Length: 256
Ligand code: OOG
Ligand code: MG
Image 1: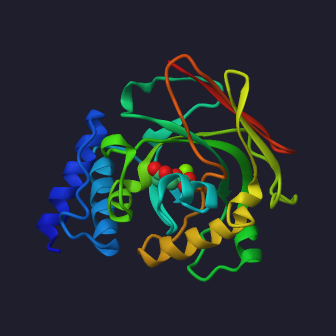
Image 2: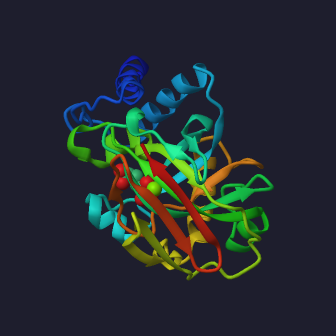
């Protein structure tokens, strides 16, 4: 796929996100494989950086069986986070900037050191300054929230918003902590951090490998979102969304 074509599709997906207007899927029709899809993602994030957004880290996708089953995609993917996607714990989140947002329970890592491609589990843990309960707001730019692997990769893995709870000491066993995501006081998703690749630290190791392979090794100060531990829930105005993770505390927001 030539560069012009990549740039044109990056503009299409970025404009859809910017205007919060869904577009038809294009990866199958345009014959887009994984490599071209990541090139489109990189170019679309390039447009956001040109508008003044700052890179804040990486998000992992389809790191749990629950997410793979819900979306019908069975390959791990990753996307790029920017500061414009950050929402504040406990604050209102206006849904006006989204097309058809959903929320899912995650665990976030904050890095104190860069991580090379081949980082082992203990090396990855060494580079973690803190961990936190986190909620990801995903929002596909494709009609009806339906996509192929190529589409969702090009669309920055549906990245749209993230809310990080209080940072905690990572020197505790966080491989299998129970979690509950409630909406308006009703438990809607129940799971465990073990739903994420058996241990969320494996997601960080994968992020290090994939990000370095793309020429953007994980940096000190970056956040890595480990991926949804359960299926996602639809968002609408007037909701209070709360995630509680055993031993890690809570993170929440109100939709308007
Ligand atoms: C794609 C993004 C997947 C996760 O945590 O698995 C993801 C989507 O489901 O729209 O963020
Ligand atoms: Mg996610």
